[in-house]
Image (cartoon, helix red, strand yellow):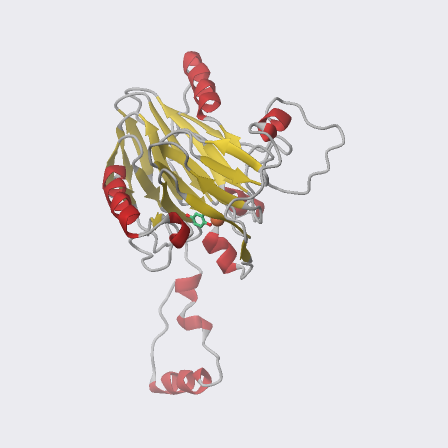
Length: 346
Ligand code: GTQ
Ligand code: FE2
């Protein structure tokens, strides 16, 4: 769109209305209604080994209890100081060391955990405890009490994804702490999976939550689904094989604000270029390869993390059978009729 010429009369007018909290649309129109997405969000890769070293250092500086959550935020280089990995989402790496208790709290923000390293630490949500393993996808729904603990002898690391910037945008944040560090366990481990993970639902179901009733999607099952599909040898040109985690009650995404995906790229596969309006955070869990995002190329292996901003072309290439977890704000964009994707010519 055209830039409107400046004249002394116009400048004087802008000055005058500025004092009344008014501004001329014709000076900013092109910046706020762009012909295609224009984001401050930039492509970036974080190597997990680098983060693990800093987290270990953080472990000597602060306890989980004092920190409340011992998390290093993945700050997008184009959005520094805003605690954002993309314009709409937060990501962090959380470490829970042996003996740690990350105390119970609850908040409007929904959280996902994607387990990167360690085995057997617990998170508790709404009275149920689940042990976590690498590749597990665990949900903390909005306003549910949650605390984390580690009774194993090894530190545990996971990727946190939260809708913090979305809740911030709507000024809808509520949060509270609990007087007890750990919530009371009222249901056996595996209860939610037993109730909802077997293609069966209560006949008179009356849950009101828009979040999946399954709170741990174990990697064992996810990996099996991918492996079965591998035998079929049918691949999507842009994604290899990409599945979304779904809410068994609705068939919709597992979380209302964050779409979560798991993707298999077989050895030697190179995807066709793809772009979409949902900026996406990727975490590799298995394999090795590289992704080209806009003008940059990122070499990744297990536990490495990278971000693809809105409307940036991306291609992936796998040197070994590789599994990528990813998340984005796609459920929100789809509900608002804003989501768009472009498969190039594929
Ligand atoms: O584990 O409860 O990375 O509340 C940010 C906010 C983790 C958590 C984060 C949180 C949590
Ligand atoms: Fe939390």
